[in-house]
Image 1 (cartoon, rainbow, N blue to C red):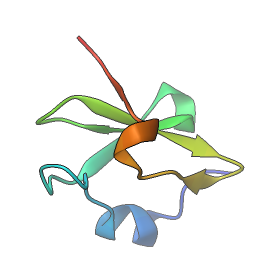
Image 2 (cartoon, rainbow, N blue to C red):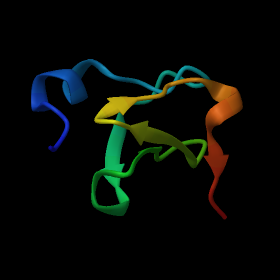
Image 3 (cartoon, rainbow, N blue to C red):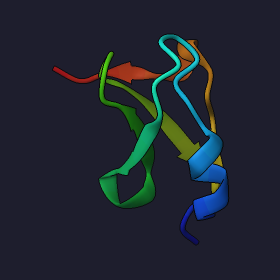
Length: 56
């Protein structure tokens, strides 16, 4: 199930407060500014810095 567009509209990176975008076919949310990717587990975004990975 995709992330609700209304939820996506209010989500932001907890580090730099930039809006996030869906990546990896809904498996993650990416911050364009700091390039962190937050996982989506069981259709729930995990917006914890320690759970994020950083893309190069």
